[in-house]
Length: 74
Image (tube, rainbow, N blue to C red; front, side):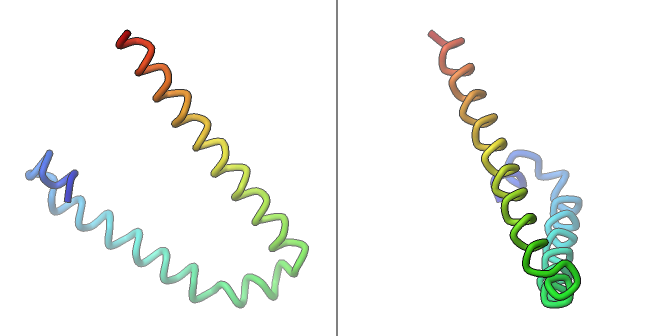
């Protein structure tokens, strides 16, 4: 809703983007059991660690960006 209030002309494309993201999420969750069987327990563990690493990298990037913005305003 925040994005839609900032750019009301882009509302249809925002609805499409959110709908596609929801559809992809449903497909991934529906296929999770098959993927687990294919990649096995070690593969799941490797994917968990990889996703944790990606999430940590994003968090550090956001933190450093916030610190840069804060210090540039001083």
